[in-house]
Length: 97
Image 1 (tube, rainbow, N blue to C red):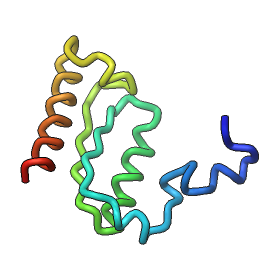
Image 2: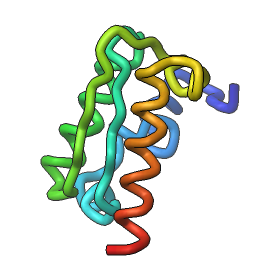
Image 3: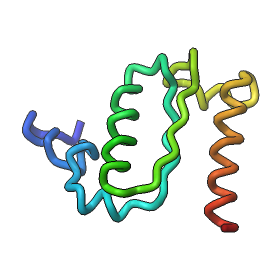
Image 4: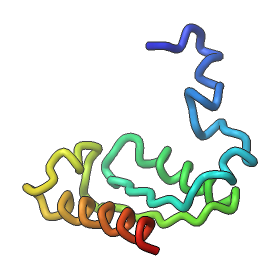
């Protein structure tokens, strides 16, 4: 891993949740997809909350009963198709707003 010391994990470029609020405030509107069975789900929730607190428009959607590999199953699982369509819809809206 590129972190040389445990302290490096505290740098915002390694852990985005450590980013200064003024930097987060410059992010574009975000769509945060969270698989509720993912071990990283709490971090997704936290990041969405941090962006919201910084004034970033955030749409958060939780996909129930899904794991981190959710998108890898696109086309084979209803929830993965739903996520794929949700992402495409958000990109389309951003491009053609």
